[in-house]
Length: 357
Picture (cartoon, rainbow, N blue to C red):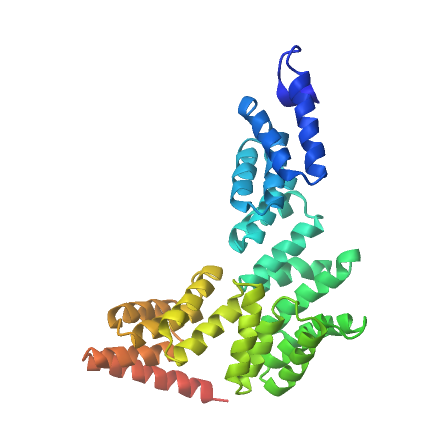
């Protein structure tokens, strides 16, 4: 092993090998600073030794130095593609909240090792955070009856994706499976979100409040509790719930978006923009967030920028009624009556279509 790793002469082989073993022992003992120092010392002389650089990445990640760990993992992978190192890279991205980059690496791991359930579950979670519910459903549906020890996690992620995708009936089947194991925060969150998406806001509020009581640390629980409170008319309670979610998960999409909306309505535009820009970082290109940012710009008098943003949104989503309404307002403000009338006519047609049984 040492000959393969260090490629040194017989006279100098023992020293680097012993240093490598010592670094591993230090890392296993939790003495990360010393282990990192030894790995760096080795790499000064042997910069292309993949196991040393990979272990350095692991030690850096354990210290929360994810950017440095990512650099080491990527350097190893450039010369030595390896699913485990790719998974370590994905984990570093994930812990930094870079879910898109994590998903890219996890897709590679899944392609190379499709039975790696850690990669499957992490990839599903990344998809959920990006709002890619259909990808979660496609990934997990074949696994729901054979996930073994991971069956609860598979059911929860799959149920969440189905509910958020509007497939309430299929989601309820998965929820019932979870409920067979007794009442839980996960089951209450799924039941509550199902009710929320079917506009049963008071029913959702009951289940989501219970989910908060059972496990206030459950990801997304305060975000959806806040949504239910907001839909029930309790804006102050909703804002507090969103703040609790963001205290634990600063890049939660729904909490950032809704905080931005609430603050925009309160005319606190600077704070609103901060939350909306964070939401857009989590889901680049999201039309709802882009519309809210345009609304903030319009309220701040940045009319031209707001108009350009709304025109861009409508180019991608011609049926976005509220964007047409806002764009009409801008056209009238710019004394472009013909364009404003055109937008109003579109709004009328879209509303008529929605009202048709």
